[in-house]
Image 1: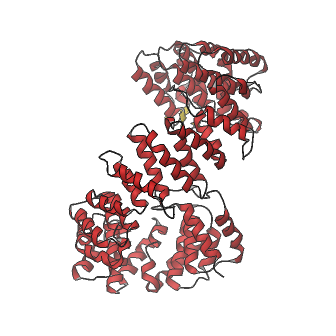
Image 2: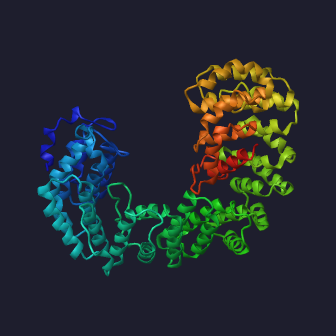
Image 3: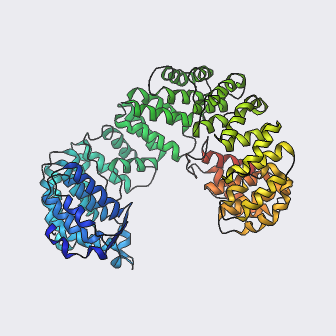
Length: 621
C-alpha cells in the first residue's frame, strides 16, 4: 500500500476517470485523512462518482487502490466505507477471468492491486467496529477466486477464526458465506445462531433449483423473520445485500416465497420484509394478486412509520384492480385507513377507489385531488354528474403541470358528458396549461365554435411540435378541413425530431392523411423499431388495409414496450399471421410476467395488457 506522500509518483494527469483527467484524485485521497465526517463523506462520494461511476471503472481506478488501502488503516473515520469502495471496485464475474480479454482489462488491474494489499488489511477482521469487520469480509469475498495459493491458507484461517469466535452472529454468518467462496463446508444447520442457519440455507438454496426443498424453506421462514438489527448490511461483490439476494432467490420460487412471506408477516413483518417479498412475487408472477393482497392486508397493522404503511397501501392499490371482487374485509379496512386524518389516508383512499367501493367516491368528493379524481373517473365512469363539477372546479382554480394533465385526462371515461368542461378546456388551451391533452379532448368532444377553432389554429403554430400535431388534428376533427393538419405534419415528418411520436397523433385524420403517405411509407424500413411500428400503425389508419402494416407489426411483436404497442396495432387490424401464433400462446400461457410494469405506462400493468392482447389475437379465426 502507499501513503499520501507517494501520490506525486503517479501521473494522475495522464489517467482518466468518469469526468476526464484524474488529476483531482490526489486531493480526494488526501481529504480522507481529515478528522471530519462530512469532509470524508464528500471525498468518498466523489471517488465513487469518478473512479467507480455507476459500476464503470477507468484507468485511474487501479492506481488508487494502494492509496485507499493505506487510508483504511490510518484514517480516523469511515474506514468501513473505504473497504466497501475497494470491494465494489474489485467486483467481477468469476467467469470473466478465463476470457481472453481479462488480463488487459481495468478490472483485472484492480483485482491484482487488491490481492496485493489484502494481507495487510486482514487485521481489520479484529477491529472493534463491526462495520469494519463486515466490510473486510466482503472485500475478501470480492477476490476470493483470484488469491494466489500462498495467500489463501492464512486468509482462510483468519476467516475460520471469525466464524468460530466473533461475538456478532451476523459476522459469523458472513464468515461462513466467505468460506463457501473458498469451497469450505460447515455444519451450519446445527448452529445455535439463527443468522448462521439462515445463511447456510441461503447457500443451499443457491445451489438448488426451484421448487426449493421444504426443509430449507422452513429454515428461511423460521430464522429469517427477524433481521439483524445492525445498519451495516453492506452489499456483497454482486452489489446486492444479503437480504436483497434472499428476496431474489425466494422470488424465483413463488410458492416458497409466499410461504416465507406469510410466516414473516405473522411474526411481525419486521423491516417490512415479508410484505416487500410478497409485492416482488406479484410483480414477477401472474395470478398471485389475491394471495399477495391478503398478505399485505395482514401486514398493515405491523408497519412502523407512515412511509412503510404508505408503501404497503400503494402496492395494494396497484394490485386490487386485478381482483374480480375485492371482499368486504379488505374494503372495510381500506375505508378505515382512508377516513383517518393521517399522511397515509390518500394512499389508502387510492386503493379503496381501485377496489370500486362506492364509499370511496364520497371521500374523493370531500377531499379531491387530481390523481384521485382521475382514478375515481376510471373506476366510477357512471358518476359523471358528481365528478365532472369537481374536476371543473379544480381546473378553474388554476391547476398546472401534471396535476392539470391528470384532471383533463380524468374527463376521458365520461364520453359526451365531458363536454360540460368545455369552458375550462378552452382556458387550458388558451393559457397553455395541459394544452396538449386539452386540445385532444376538445377534438374528441366534437363541439366546434369559432373561439375553439381559432385557438386550435393558433396552437398549430406553436413552438411545441407535440402541441402543433395535436391541435391541428383537433382542428380537423371539428372543422373537417384537413389542410392545416396536412401542412403541419408535412413539416413535422420532414424534420429530424421524434417522428414516431408525431405519427401517433394521426389516427383521427384517417384517410384524410393520404397525401402524407410518401412521407410515411419509407419509414416502414427505418432502423429505429419505434419508427417502423408507428409508420405501420399510421399506414393502417390511413389506408384501412392491413397488407403492408401487418408484416412490419408482426416482426416487432415481443415482450417489450415497443412490442406491446405493435401488438395493440396488430389487434386493431384483426389480422394474425399464422407464424405468430406460437409466440402469442407463449405470451398468454406464461406463468411468469414477461414485461415489467413501467411508471410511464399509465394505469394497469403492461404484462396484463400483453396477456389480454395475446388472448384477443388467438381468438381471431
